[in-house]
Length: 450
Image (tube, rainbow, N blue to C red; front, side, top):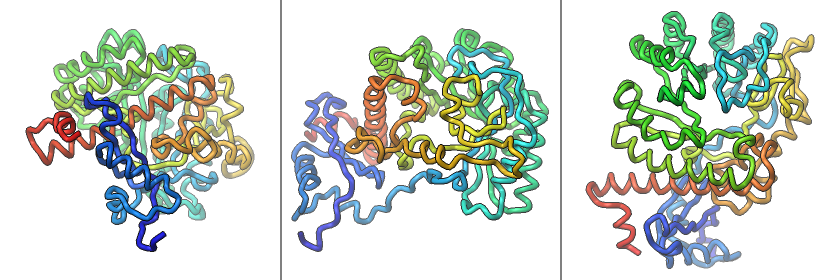
């Protein structure tokens, strides 16, 4: 092999002709996930690319691969290898909630338990220790378990302690709260605003949906208006069940007419093996989510609203594992790697707990073997990931999904992820084309080029 040949990066030729009304193999995406690089090519170009990728000793180059020479690789999300590497923490201050959402992942963990003060103090001390080798900014969320604002007075104590530790160590940090929005008061709103805490409100937008799934529509609607009046930034997140999905276009229209100050909406699938636990049901649900979301995205653009979903926006980073093994300090004072499993009454609790703040030690204690076992759920350990073009974006799928759904459902989830990633890549290509060629039809241009 010539020394002038650029070492082959990981790259794929993905057939996408059906997205343009052509034969599937008339149009391909060339995709190099480690570089976040992509482009369209015809069948001949794709065959040339595939031949070079399959050749153990290629003697020629391909234009797409050559272009990668000057591209830096995407930054990789820093997955913790040990607890000392952890940079993202959830504090579940209570297991109490004033709502009864039909799809709630933590309903089985409801109780009157509140996190012991010693647990959050040990956690904050640990995060801001000067000796910790991980110097990344610390990200701390108040979320999950129950409604965090039920423990607002405790949040104030925690934040004051964080500020004290920050002043001593200089370690940067950021804060977030996920709330149902029903308990907001002017005092709480002004506090969140002044402390620059990122606020996300789970809200179904439409009264019939909100009152069916959560309740307190009028109260939350009034609180959103008050957030706007008091200049407190916030985001809206809506999990969508199968019944709610067809109403997404109506939700967008309602945002435009009744909430003109809300210019973005994040929607996510509901992960419930009780509802979608067979391959057939899960595929039907994912197919509907994809169909509704992709159509609604275009509607949202016309309305001046950004519609987003973490399921689709996967091109910003690369990762070996989807589950980043966060430090989730539960209301019981134990440490879980997932906020969705955080109470001892939940069936998977023992599998997810890898530490505790309840010992006499001055810091949290961790089970090193359990932590290592958790980290083994990644793209290198799962055979189905090894030849998948979406593996660096997906990270091997959710560990909780793999432990709650039947194995027959895994392929359904993988196919959904690949489909969403293809759509996201094509969206990026379309936007670049329309910026360069205003007024030209992207799909027609591609068809004409085949």
